Image (cartoon, rainbow, N blue to C red; front, side, top):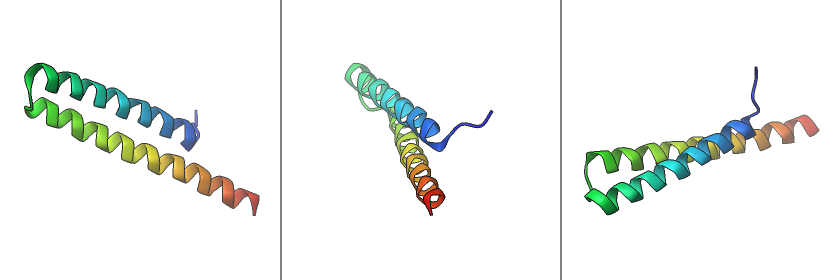
Length: 66
């Protein structure tokens, strides 16, 4: 089953929000440690991938209109 880049991008964004929430909770409870940095890294990668996928969706949509 093929998913649209928009759907995949939204899933990545949701994961980015989730990892950000977990990172904030972890920092509040235990301070900055390895796991906190790992969660922030994962959130950053997910947000970047999500933005890239949403951008790809709009580029494909624009090219299909031509």
